[in-house]
Image (tube, rainbow, N blue to C red; front, side):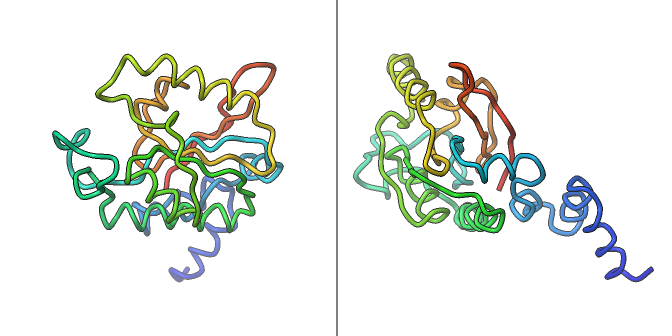
Length: 199
């Protein structure tokens, strides 16, 4: 069987098989190219969900340089070129999957704002999503406000919320990779994780 025929056969298999083929040929882009598929894509097309997104890949580092300022991106740890491509791939994957995007909100950190703009073309800065990596006392109030807003969200479309690892972990528990999306839905007063995918 030729390589092309083999590829076509794999693509015709279940979503897992398609993702495996993509991972063999383009491992760093596998999930972005596949996007949310199967039952997750169908649920997201209905709207009313939340896409909790950790900012895309950054230049090396942990946190931000000493003395960074929110009003000066040059003082922060920013997206790498790979991260910029990653954010664009995320937006493209969601568009191809027919996922409607409603509000797009972001931490005021440049790496989050840039992720949102590159993926969705628009963004509303929201301090609730700001990192509390260096300010742990801010965590309970911000997490409570985010949870209350998320529980009340019903649409239209799906809310895209771009933030930081510490914020996501405080809200739902897992430690996401940069560029990873955790899809949530409010069910009976609880935030239920309905799927995860990466870009």
